Image (tube, rainbow, N blue to C red; front, side, top):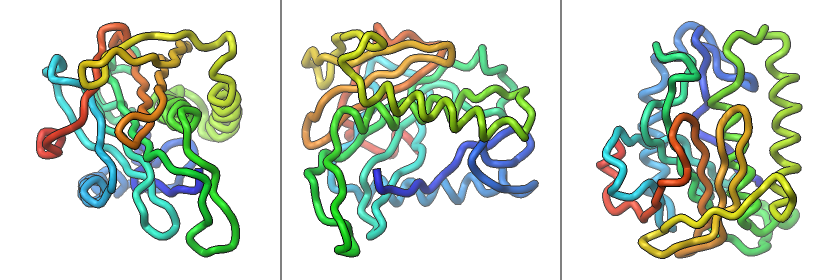
Length: 229
């Protein structure tokens, strides 16, 4: 997908995750990134999804992805423990679910008019969810020199899996979306689980998590973004 993200995962030293660069001031930059994300959520021309009211824990807004012309294309909302190496909890103890909302887009010309952009699909949601899970759960004790190689390898695998939703790595899990039972593609890995469902209300829905069972989840349109800030 031809989008850019306004926030990046960070490790315990203040450096962004495996694909970024940063320094000691990076943790202090998080509030600014969060404010930018809020602005992006408000600019979106489609509804955002999160866990339904049955979930009573912490909620927060994550990053949005935009096209080169600034159009918001997708974004994520978090529930539970924020997946970060900065937390006092070990990765095995973290319990979270992240819901990814992807605008349903047809094949269209790129903003600069030089080409076309692929249509978004449930594959797009599965890919973003898989990549998000990797960004939040990459091995904390891995040597820095190996992180990018690991991320590149795992990202390639996640992309291949997202493009083969009918393959053996996925099963079908029915979960409620605004109270209606919906078929989700579902897979598990050593890092957590990933879900993805086809378009609804002009969006595709993805999700990923760790420490929280996917089987009891429900999703709904977010009526008040203030509940996530």
